[in-house]
Image (tube, rainbow, N blue to C red; front, side):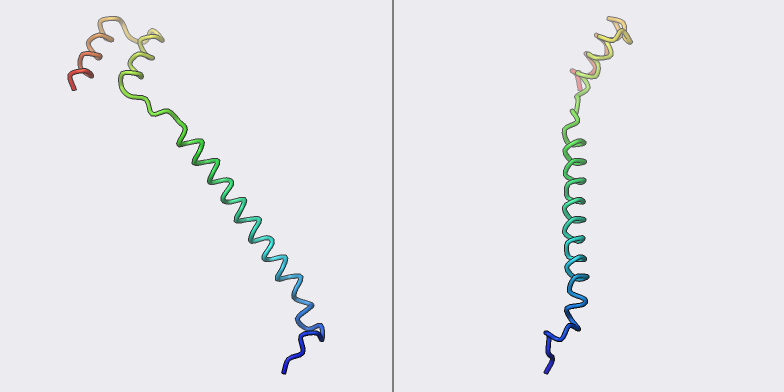
Length: 77
């Protein structure tokens, strides 16, 4: 019969608890990091072609003729 009060297992108890706490902390840290990363990349707006075309026209990268031609191509598709 093993006597658990003789100090043999008590000496390693702190180490096991420390490992358990570190495991919990690292798990919560990993969850928090991945939660923030997914929220960051999921919240990025997914623009459609018309919105991108309007932005380029508003920035002056396209002439009116180019804008109307590209808009007609998008609407036809």
